[in-house]
Image (cartoon, rainbow over all chains, first blue to last red; front, side):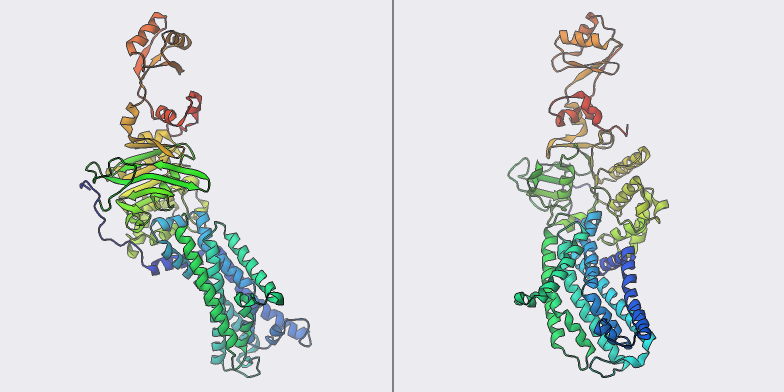
Length: 287
Length: 336
């Protein structure tokens, strides 16, 4: 360093390849005790439902004991069980899990002072958001997939492969049943990515991960309530949970696609807007 | 110099300075949070290869200035140049060469020290993936954490946390290292180690910017000083020059302190009691004059010493409006 003025830095790398950051992010997500506990609890849900239905079948004499009609039809059905579990948890539990993950991703890291480490490395703000979004997306996919797989296994253990009836009354081959479940998993994951995108936008605005969870909880509940009120029916098309009822279509044969497609479009809109807001916020935020 | 640095407040910005290159500089830096002005009109020069101590009481804007220097915070007004790059726009060119420990160490409590560093290292552009484990181990070794690297960060003592933060800053050979209060929570041995590390960095030609409220620490390790007060730089320059610029004085050791003070007062020489004697101000009088006055008053003079203005005095003068010697004791002396 003998020159009087600062030499321009040698043409070294100025950023790290995205896969390396993504892997580091996954390591961090899946080593966090909270993540593992939540995944464990989510995996328990289909098992508990399966056991409860099994016990109910041996003690009660028929359906209609106030139980959810869908769950009742899952009693002797390995196809319905995983999807029914997804339908039930999509209304609240899965969005909350997503919100938790998104809250930890930015707000949580900020409150720990750990976001600074990457910003100073440096990781550009855009890249940071990309990695964070991929991390939340991966976690969400893992959660949904885990529930579906456990649900399917529990259903198969209880009922065998000969129990893959659709709600339309037809019986599916094992492969076709897997296809239906895969569609359900993909569709639910997409809905959660939409929730996650909005949650990331909130996460970029605060230092309190709890606030992200509460906001998503409030948003989900308020949306659900608004959907019950016909006086604000003009608002309904803009509410994400409006499409969530369509998931049950996965259990029909042939599968009606209009509701599901509408849900996909709605989710993509939320996803784009949510990530856009998150990007706008994270690039201007003080680190 | 890659960019010309134009500013309206201007000393020496018209031509590329032939003088020592600056590793970092700010011009007219200002940051306003809502209604509070955190930093105002900060023109900071960090010469390349220097160890610059940034001094200031809590809340004087040290950390905010550092955050703007590193591009973490966008200044409300003013310009920042780091290693010849405009910040925060060109952060990706400047920051890989800069190691930083800002606002205390930030790590994940459930990961081990080693895992935490690996996560940090994953984002370092100058580290290839295969070099990460080695760089992490070297860095842990350097700060004396190799033995505790497998333990969870949650169980670390404050000093260990601080060391891990330092290890993060030293993962890659740097051209500049920025340490914000690096000795917070360290025991005297840890403080000495930090000083050693700073000295090593300095010997390697690395520019070091240390912020601290521990004056002794700065005096012991720094070549340059910048004093911040109420969000502005009140003095900066080479440590020696700043120390010599202080008001001169002599320290007279005598058992008759009160008597001596009275004699000085009669001769209109400002003075104050110090342990073992008095300190006489030489702005208006000369040393022989002081001694003469004391001896004539019958004060037993054991020793007369020319006082080298301590950083403490300088600091007090710059940051306290009304001189109030008692409050100097607030300045931490842990490292003495």
